[in-house]
Each structure stands twice: as C-alpha cells, then as structure tokens.
Amino acid sequence: MTEDPIADLIAKVAAQDRAAFRDLYSAASSKLLGVLLRILGTRTEAEDALQEVFTRVWLRAARFDATKGRGMTWLIAIARNHAIDRLRTKSPAQAGAEGDELDAVPDSRANAEGTLIAKGEARRIADCFATLEPEKAQAVRGAYLDGLSYIDLADHYAVPLNTMRTWLRRSLLKLRECMDQ
Image 1: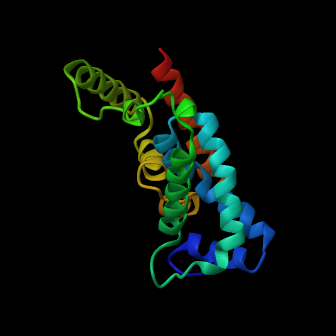
Image 2: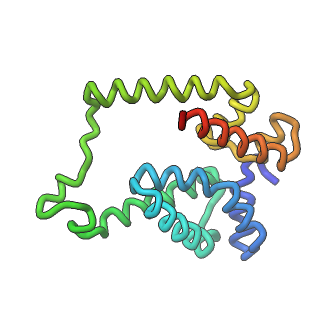
C-alpha cells in the first residue's frame, strides 16, 4: 500500500477487482456527490451523475497514472468533467431558458441579503459543531471538508474503522438535528 489508498483501490479496480470497487465507492462517493451537487444543483441529478461517474471509473481505471496525481484528484476530475458535460447537453427547456441561455447562468455576485444569510448560516454551523466533542468535530471536518478517507481518520484517532464510521454517522445526525432547530 502507498500513501494514497484511493490510488491503490483504483489499481485494483483496473484489474477488475469488485471488492476494491465497492471499497472505492465507499471511500469516495460522498466527496464526489458533493462535487456533483455543487455543479449540477439538484440531488437527483447529482446521484444519477454519480452512478455514471463510477461506471466510467470501472471502465477507465487502467488509464489512471499514480505518477501524475493522487487518486481522489483523478476521481474528482472525472466527476467534474462529467457534470460539465451533462450541463452542456441539457436543452434550453431543461435548463429553464427560452432563447437566451445566459439567463440560466446564476449570478455569482454576492448581494447584501445573501451575505447576511450566509453569515448567519455559517454562525449556526459553527454553533452546531461546538455541540460535538472536539475530536469528533475534527473528524467530521477531516472527512467532509478536507476529503480525508475514513481509514486515514481511523488511523489518526487510533480507533477501528467501524468506530470511525459510527462517529461520523452519529455526528452528522447530531449536526442535522441542530441545524433543523
């Protein structure tokens, strides 16, 4: 095993190892879903795209070259490119535009109301993170903001892999409850 467990899994997938493919899905799907969701905008569309991305990974795993980059970077590039391709192939009616496709492009400039809402949400998220035990909050940040694998986190905190999964699942549920209040 190298320092890049995702690259190791991709190499095994290239050899048609189904167990490695399941492990790769478990390790990378949440991060890739987040990338797809940010680009495509809807969960349904992102989930459909995720299935197609993993089909591409299964078919093209042999093309991965670990000397050119990390495994997760390669997977994110596939997801990003696929999402952009999906956006390009949408008809104007699907994109919600009737003639001028530029109307379908969201305005990314921050307005005063949006800035205030974002600051309020950021404060709520920070407050909710504060309700978690410090090491569990750091584990959630590591998994979902820094892209660390569950295996890396389990090693870092010296806990079994299933314990780390339980930490993350329970912490996310607690964060969801806090945010819903």
